Length: 209
Image 1 (cartoon, rainbow, N blue to C red):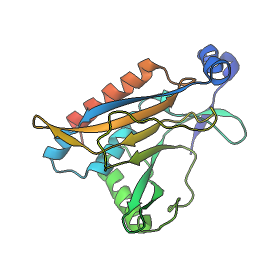
Image 2: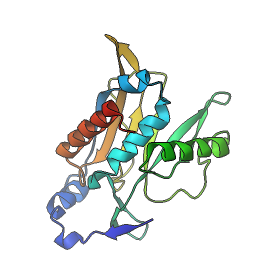
Image 3: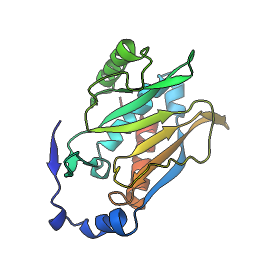
Image 4: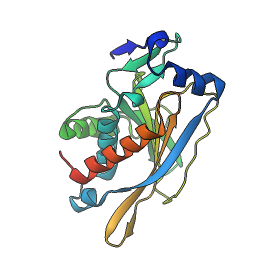
């Protein structure tokens, strides 16, 4: 796990960071629908495919790489990997797994399949141990095609993005997946979220695998 410590005193974003961290602590979320028609048409596995493109897009924008370490350092991680939920039908509980990011789709899916096989049936909140710091969170709620979703995280020092996916639906021959994105305004402005959503949607539509 590689990272760079951010020099907050000489950081161009210092004024905005301090304002939205201390003066007006602020997180916000945006819910959008993602066109996943190409994924459905190619009969790809939805969850690992979406996880891959989320990770690929996250890794292309440094605003989604920032976090506080336990020692208080503000850092920029070199890469980010997804931590995601899996559901246990019998007990109606979930577990967190994480899969190390790979830039190649086939390699990421191989790692994902291995993690599911090794840890997917373990009924514990954190089924796969030794989760690294450089992870971002993804949850799947396949039971509802929501139009809005808001998380309430206690405190204002969680800087990493959180993604929540819902039940996809068909409209006029195309398939749409609801996705909520929650970010911290100290490190991520509306421009950055909109740029992320555009890049993510373009990647899913292009399916450059």
